[in-house]
Length: 210
Image (cartoon, rainbow, N blue to C red):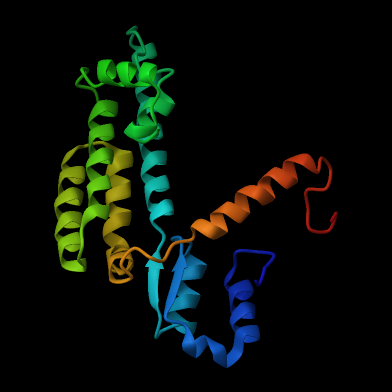
């Protein structure tokens, strides 16, 4: 394991400098959409299949959905309407199979409203079907169809995510070339443990302090 202090081009280049000629043996690399990662991996691991992690793609869309919800709550309160989505964040962000019985009932009620938040949620759930595709060609067609519908939704945070999806489409398709076997799940698990340790460390929150 190699750990760097920052998420910068210089830091990642330092890893490859230490890794040396072994970089030639890399078959797959996995990252999020952070630009320094994209730039350095394009230079230093050209022969590897660069996979954009599914977790981060889904997280970006969830963030967009929450922006839509929060904006709609503010707008409805300002216009004197009952903000029906005010306390519904987790109903909209959790996977349907993880909802409690009460949340399922609440979600069904919320989806009866023809509001932007409900339409954005349905688009989010539609995108989950992308990961059921079995080939890059099928995934390519799916992404083109989904982003077309997202752009026509006139929901700006969703449209912004759709543009991101289009800009990184080639790397997203590599997830299917790797047959869904490559992800950063193990690293994210370690990150979560480190966050817990940091919270419990009170004042020891910087590299210098430790």
